[in-house]
Length: 183
Image 1 (cartoon, rainbow, N blue to C red):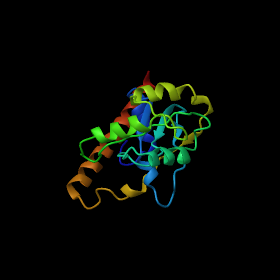
Image 2 (spheres, helix red, strand yellow):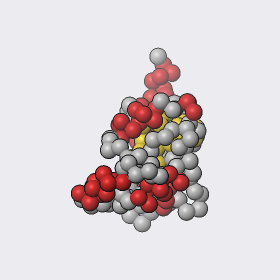
Image 3 (cartoon, helix red, strand yellow):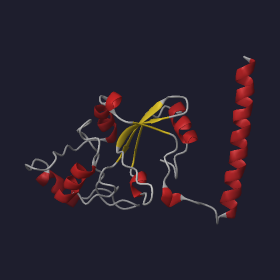
């Protein structure tokens, strides 16, 4: 997911063939808490992308029993879709999942009272979750991530490049509209 997720990100993603997004960014909002973990993100054109925010609110879970308990407590859509993603290991340019994470999850995966753990892939998760699509909440509009507010404002070269690209995007949309109206 980009720094922020305005409607144009939805449009570009959908037009690029992206039907699913997995992220944990929105769970970090402090003021405007985002309470949905699995939902249909609807664009201005009515198209939808199935989106999943990790219900543990992190991308580097320590893969402990309390991690599973937190997901079970936090995952608001569990009554609709019983599946959720847990991203475990060392994130932020870390080493990813370690032997200790896999060992912990292997030991606790079938303990009574804890959610069952299946080792899988994100694309498989979305295949399962897609079956519940029609019952999931719809969120329209921008998905705003507070921690990235004002990004790049002190980087003058980046700011100039961003403005240049915004102008080019405007021109591309303008000429596309003219071309579409001529045909």
